[in-house]
Image: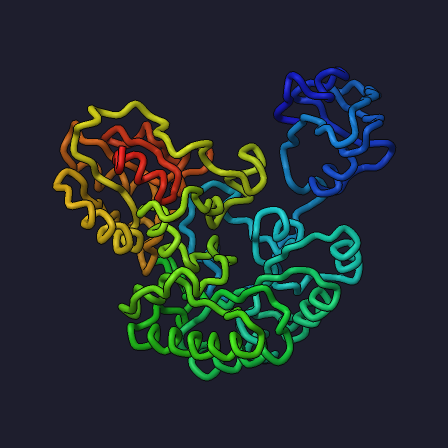
Length: 450
């Protein structure tokens, strides 16, 4: 146990930070899902290990009252690691020397439920299905990539990839909400294969809540010869295929289902679809409709920001200390003392984010605000999202910026105050203000309509 609310039932009963919670009413929880269900009981007998001393603590609390204890991990038994060997896996494209936790590949449906991770279902079992259905662990996110068994097996480099989508059918049959993902690799599952995949979704999995179509991310450490970024022509073909199927889905099912990631529209040099085309933004966390949401927030069209997930490495780097699917910052305000409010402002972001933010700032007609696009040399390749920026790259860019200006940094770059390369904001050559990664926070920081 790593956190304890001093006013909680757990604290009143005598639990302490550092206690190892072994069992609740004789049941040893396997993960935080089961832990939360057990901890909801109004009468608890908790077996505790405190520094090698075994204790039994009885807790009485009001029905529905939270226990008030935060545990150190989401999974207590063992993370179900991924036994696929996908060519496009970004974890294989990491440089050596990063934190060990970043290299752990999971294929665990529990982490899909808790954090929005994607599971291929290649390690899914009847027992897993029984638990998901019995405990209503919904929604889940499933990596589809291709509905053709041979193509999917080839992409996952796992023969079970050819048959594991049977579990997707079972989940949908039991009314579990599922969001699908297709990572499109040029020359592998784009073009006619992508067209056939969306046809397969229509024919076999029409109950899917949504399907996000996202481009392959390639770092400079990629060692797979087939993996490469899309050309502009290929990106346009993907957008055309997805938009063509959207119309058919809308006609048959009453919703568009499939959505191309914002990156495709940037690469294709096409305007983003209007907000109403995103079906309430179910795949916002996967970069689908992020630009449209940000624009609406920045222009004041919505008064509540749509929060983004903690990023690619959310479950190992951003939780549970930061909470399950909880915001990274409690508000959109600065976490660091900033220079004079009247100082010129530089908005730091990735090269992709800069393409979205720059036109919005231009609408303000202010010469004291600028976008600072940070080229990701650490990962290289086509890596352009803000969530993968490192202290090394941000520091390199900031070193060439003037002193005394305000520099705004989106919190999606950080997890527990650290960039992916282990650096922190205090290591940067200029003071920065860390803001929530949404349009409302930026609007507030710039004093728009203040």
